[in-house]
Every structure is written in C-alpha cells, then in structure tokens.
Length: 194
Length: 320
Image 1 (cartoon, rainbow over the protein chains, first blue to last red):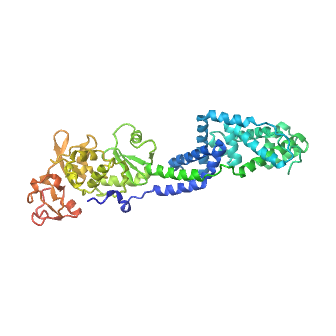
Image 2: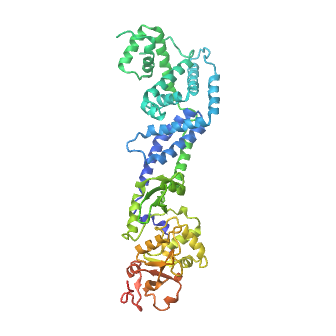
Image 3: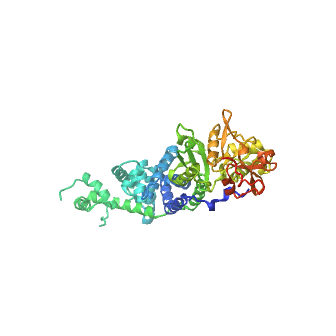
C-alpha cells in the first residue's frame, strides 16, 4: 500500500517533452555564454557585473526559449537580452557610470611623444578603450556589437530598438569620436595602405 | 567619375576604412584621396583606429574568464528548472482546470473559477515564474479528459511532491493514492492506514490541501457515515460526479451533501483478499475506516480481489 506513488516515473505513459528543449538549451549556453559575458564585460567594464548579467541573460533566455520560433537567430536574440539588461543596469547605476566616464576623461587627450613605438601603441589601445567607455550609451553598445562581436546592422538595430540605418549611424559616430580622442596618438601622415 | 567633396566622401571614407564599403564607394574614395592629402591622412587614421580596435577585439582582457560565471549559471539554471512550473488551462466537464508540471513531474492540478482571468489566477497560484505552455501539458490534458469521461482508470504520471506541505501530508496522500479506482474509504480509514488512527482531522486537512486532486484521488475519501462531507472548497458536487464516473453512486443527503449508502456497496475488509456483500458476516457493524467499499464487482475484481467464497457476491450480485 505504501509503495510510493511518487517514484513511478519510469512507468509513466506521459512523455516529458521538455527534456529535449532543455538539452537544446544546454547547447545554447555552451555556444554563447562566453561571448555574451565578454560583450557584457566590454559594456560594463566590470567582471562582477559581467558575471551577474551574463547569468541573468541566460536565465531569462531559458524562460523564453520555448517560445522562440524554430530557426530564430539565437545569438542575436541573446545579444538583445544582454543589451537590455546592460542598459537597465546602467539606468540603475547611472552614478557609477558617470564616475566611469569621468575617469575615462581624466587622462590627457594627447599623449607625449615616445621613442618606443610599442609603448605608444599600447597607450593608444588603452586610450581607445577609454574613449569607448566614455561614449554615449547607444553609440558605445552599437560600436561594441559591430566591431567587437561583428553583428550586422540589422541585428544591432533590433537589439537597440532602432533602425538598421540608425545602428550604422551610431557606429560611425562612435568611430569619429574615437578618432578624435586619439588625436596626437596616431602616426598620421604616412602613406595609406592599399 | 565626378568630383566628390570632402564632406560627401567622409562617410564612405569611414566605411572604406572599416572594410564595409562597396566597390563603388571604395573607388570614389580612392579617386578623392588621390587628389586630397587631408582626406588621405584621415583615411590612414581611420584605418589605424580600425586596426587598434581589431587588436582590442582579439586580445583577451585580464577578466576574460567565464569559467566561474558559467559554473554559477549551470547551478542557477538547474535550480530554475527544478522550480519552474509549466502550466496549461483547459475546459473540462468539471469546469476550467489547470495542470502544472515541473521537470520532475506533475506538480499541481487545480479547479479554476468559472469566471475571471484564469491566467492571472494561475500566476497567483504558481508564481510569476510559471510559464503557460499548452503544448507541454497537452498529453496530460488528453489523459485527464479521458479519465473524466470514464475511458481511463489510471493516471500513471510522474509526480512532483514539492508542493506538499509536510511529511505527514505526503504520507496521507500516498495512502490516498493507493485507494483502488472505483473504491472509497473514510478519513479515519486513511488515518488508520498511515498508523495515526487518532489523526482524523489532520488527515481531512491534509486532503483539503491536496495539490493534485483527481490524480491523487482524495474524492475517494468520505465521512465515516458515508457523507461525502467536502471537496474543493464547497464544491462537493464535483466529488459526487468523480465518484459517479468510477461507478459509485452518492445520493443527495441534505441541502449541500451527498451520501454513499454502504448497503449498496461491495465491501472489502482491510487486509482481506476477497470482497463481500455488505451483509457478509459482521461487516455491517464495522466502521468504514476498516473497509474499502466498491461500487461494482468489476472494480473490485480489477483491483485484484476475488469474490468471497461464503457470501458469493458473484452469484448474488447487488441490485444495480
């Protein structure tokens, strides 16, 4: 009489269809988590935020995964979720973000001439990161998605709820600002490469 | 190709430096910078920027280790999966019903109110994380409807016991789940079966909060006098209908209740292997708690019991 009714799973005539969906989601995590975390690290510039937000991205994705149409662009969809979480995060922490931007602007715009070209290049790269960190939010996100993760403009547009054209404009505007921010650190004047 | 101004060429110059320009634009930029040193310089700078950005892209940073976050994610996903309830709502002969399941098994069956927002009701019951997914509960829905139409005697579902409130309730529900299809006993009978004969009221409470009505057949548990006493709040008529599906007649008794008349039930003494007529031996004096009552011989025999060799219910069946 006490043979447990709660351990009769093996005898069930009901197939638990979700098991397959879960296996598929494991594959999604395996394929995309590292990249999404890297994206969020670039966006937030903090490992702990990237850890938290990347986990949250996939927890949200898991809840919505079953409703995703077959053949959907899962990677772009994850970027959209991560982008929204990143933007909410900044809204919640706008003070911290202003502090970040202030730090980015503290270093001198024009670095002094150095004999060592490699040091110069390293400094220039650090400066690029700083300028990216100080960009307006949409430009920064669009630029990171385009240049660091090679999403196309349509994907970036849907992540930022804007048109493909606006997405392109954000990226170009970001590039102009980075270019200006590097005045004096570029070896301008040499012959253009072909 | 016509002359292009510096202002016009600028976006193409950027696109060209990023490697995104089409052949036409590349050609226009080439022609322009051939005659414009300033723009040539700009192109070089933009290419340098692009190359630096590309280096940044390819250079892992010091914090670029996802191992810890991934491990935490795996554990949080496992936790979410185990808690996540997927539910479906559908009409039934007993009114709108909800079935909720986790990855472990069926976690909840609920009678929903006939009006109002059923999904909102479901979320109050299951929490905001619950996911409505008809497809995931469709097989369960089909089997439950077969059951309610009398075309299926068993719902052999894996169950998720985590909505049960205590070990005591779990024991009550296990004993209830062991009651055969087409049979009833009393609250005191369940109390006796779990070795707590004085805990009749706690047994009734445990059954009142049964998270899996129908599946765990609390409708097969009645009062010692045969009254159905209660079901799903004040909806004792549902209990009468569920019992009728299984071949047990409960007749109206008073304004709000129904009664199972034991003199019209085949009777099994607990622990016995033969079922009897209700008048066999001293059975009529025994409390229902010591008995299992069957509505039909077919049900008693389907549950594995043989007709009593002295009262011979097979030769002298009760009037239908």
